[in-house]
Length: 192
Image 1: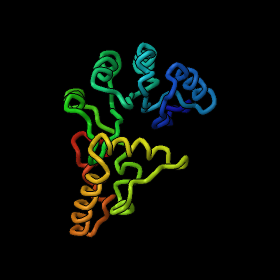
Image 2 (image 1 turned 180 degrees about the vertical axis):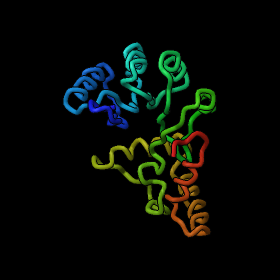
Image 3 (image 1 turned 90 degrees about the vertical axis):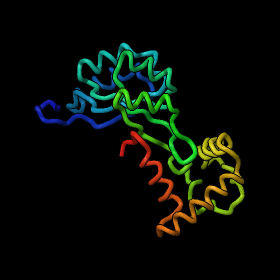
Image 4 (image 1 turned 60 degrees about the vertical axis):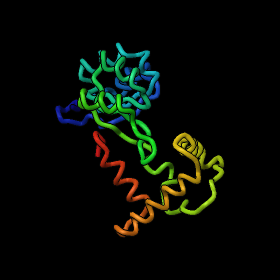
């Protein structure tokens, strides 16, 4: 809680450089009266800082830890030292966690935090019947989502998927995006 005894702990922060986390927590305590963070999200570089994360978790300065873009082996290695609350991954109609990652979440009680549920907008009525886009600098993330489509199939197959989703959406008076989001949110272990 805060310096006055109330619960003023920050809800969540994304940590790009875990080695700077302790300095950030010290700054928060001094400048903001915050002595803990409820949830942090760390990427693969955090594997080099597991003992620091363990100490901060045990000291209750970091209450919950989530990981981003970890494969199954990385999850196991991390969880041996620090409990994992959430696993953030690209999750949508065509990209889902592996069976071993689902098993890990089932066994450890953690949840998925998905990103890319609409493939950067590609899973929408806007792209139904359209040529494959050529992302520009303003849509650089779209390149990653087009790569996900290529790993799943190709643009022609993706158009068939959009057509099928459009038929379902029309039956439910919804959009392709709404159907895609519902599917993703209904997957096992998704944080809502």
